[in-house]
Length: 484
Image (tube, rainbow, N blue to C red; front, side):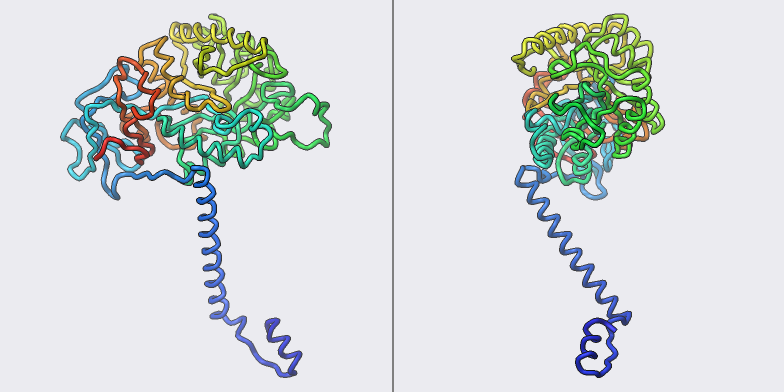
């Protein structure tokens, strides 16, 4: 007897047998509840989409080929990401999210949807191997003090801009990028593929310790600081804590682990030449990552720091511009990757009023010139990254153009496509996407650009996004100013 029927019995003294528990009644109630839940879900989705749209984050119109129809790019020159020359007499066939084949002209399937590239060059989607998705679009003070929801919304807007600059993949090396990655992969927000590292794992006083000195000393009962609570950094001292922080990022879905192994140019506390984490602490992170089939990359500039990283099993050196030539040889001999940024103390560099930071920036710029020379001389595996922070995202393409000062334009493009894809592949089974990236080859993920510009002559066309005439990610067209 239900409550309503019980109350009726108590008032009238007459017993009535209700149908509240009958199977057909319960089935009807389940249908009603399901309909209510569905309406609430749809309303919630509409509200979320409206919120994103208010920040310019609603997904941009994108389309793949018509259902069941492949997409064929014709009348083109091809840079495949690895071969340092342009190929002609070839077309690009896309089926679903993959490159199905590179047929000769007029050999593609008759039913394919065709796009005439007008003799332009087709290149793989660009890859930035040192990116901070959640820190690029806000100021440093905003990143450390504003509501984290605001930081994430700004990151979502910047993700769309990143894709429109032709960067179809980024390796995020520090910050809470897991939510944005999920939103992009689900089509809620437009943006690049994201290989997330999660929080930068740092020792106390290290490059990832964003606390103010007046918060010290830390006591066992103290709550996490803002940067740690938000997932920007994970402070760890000693092997057990390093293991914990590493495993936390793996639990969240990290495709690689990032540690801070040395000081920074503008670090408030840690000198540029400082060594951070003992070899045992580094090895703890490496072992935990290896147990999950992935690797550790490390922020570090100096030779002693790089050598300690290599001894501990770190697979990718981030920055490293102060390495001496013997250390560069060691990187080559050990198969260690080098993610190099064009830090040249130029118009795109961070501006510092602190004389100490300005001097460190100049030293790093001088080391950058040697880094490109020695990386080529000793055949180090290296890839392009930018490390743009705090509002400079629009310079991302220009940063890549600077590599052409040190090598041929196609060699520079290789470092942001084929070579970068090889670095991403170190994530193994922890890679968020199944398939080769950075190349235009059969079976690779269909990320590519059609450009206005002579890729053999220079890279200046990267400075203007209007020169990117077609942007395809995962077989979906996100921009097409070619027509067809």
